Picture (cartoon, rainbow, N blue to C red):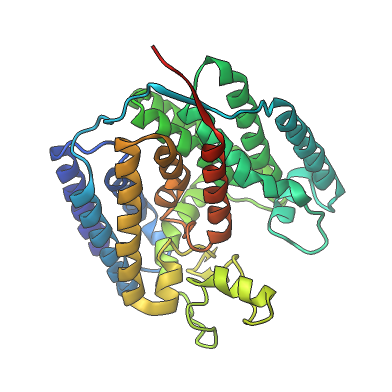
Length: 389
C-alpha cells in the first residue's frame, strides 16, 4: 500500500500543477495523470487479489511518470482554449459514399462468415479469429482498410460540416462494426477517445457529456467482453476491472526476460519483421505476449514493457523522453494549427489512454505508419472548398 499512496500523492501533485497552469483536460499531462490515478485507486481496491507490487516495477513507473509529466508540463500550452480558428473547410475531391457502403456490406458479410464458421459460439469465434488462432477463419483483406477508414473518420470529424454528415455516420458504422468483427474492447474505445479529443479541442465537448459517454462506453465494453467469453467463463465485472486496470503494473514486475532474444526484440519488432520478410533477420517476437500468473493469469504489462524488457530502466527513461516530446509536439501543433495535427494527435491518443495496459505505438508500429501515410494522402488530396461564416 505504501507504493500506492506515494503514487497517488505524486499524481495528485501533478494534477494540481496542471490545474494551476490551466492545462486542458485533453492535454497529454492531464490524460496521463488521470489514467494512472484510476490505476492506483484500483490498486487500493484490488491489491489483495494479486502479488505485491514489485519495487522494480514501481521504480520503472516513477521514471516513466516523472519524466513524461515534466516534459508534458514544460511544453504544454497555457490555457484550455485552442488558438486556431475553424474557418477552413477541407473536402476530398471525390464522393466515396458508395465505396464506403460497399466496405460496410463486405464487413457485415465477413462478420457473419467468420462468426458462423467456427466450432464455438458466434462471438467467441470472432474473438478467436481476431487473435489468429489456428483453425479459425480470418476476416481477410477487409482488415487492411482499417487504417484508411480511421484516417477518413478523423478527417471528416475535424472538418465536420452539414454536407459530410452522412459520411460521418457511415464511418461510425464501419468503426463499430469493426469492433464487433474483432470483438475488441480497444476497437470500441479508440474511435470514441479520438472523437472526444477532437470535439474537446474544438471546444464542443462538455465535461458532463464526457461522464455520460464514459458510462455508455464502459457498458458497451463490458457487454462485448461477456458476449465474446467462452461458455465456461465465470468472470465477474470486478474480475475484469481488476485484471485489465491494475494487474498489468503488477505483472511488469514478474516478467521473465528471455536473454536469447535478439537486441531490442520488442522495441524494434517492426524492423525484425521486415528483415525476416527479406530473409535477413530472425523471426520477430509475437505481438501476443506470454502469460504470467500473479496469481491470476495475465499477459499485459503496461506500455513500459517493450523498453523495460529490452533495455531495462534505461530503456524506460529513453521511452519516457521520446514519448514525452512526441505527444507534447503533436498536442502543441493540434492546439496551434489544428487540421492535420489534430487528426494525428487524436488518432495516436489511444496510446496515452491505454498506457496502463500495453504499448500501442511501437508494438503496433506497422499499423501506426499506415495510419500516418493514409492521413497524409487524405490531406494532400483534400482541397479547401469554402469558409464557415
